[in-house]
Length: 78
Image (cartoon, rainbow, N blue to C red):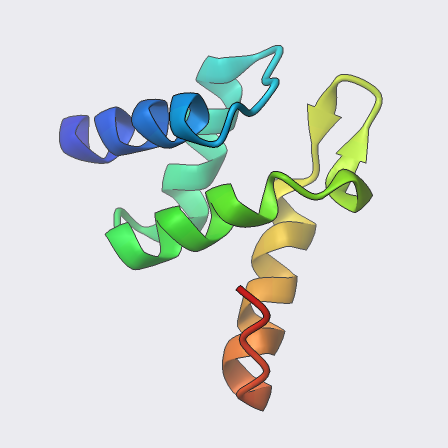
């Protein structure tokens, strides 16, 4: 879990993500990724898109749904 959180923190910095509630974001990313580094990276890449932003938060559930759709259809847009 600690390594996953560290990866998420590094990706937030590397992708210049503007996260207001970073602890909540990290918890959500970990929840949906199950700690899988590939999924963590994909979700953080998706977090760069404005369509997932609602006010000051990101809809991680929707990001994860899109990730699953991309994987199932073979249309990996990342």
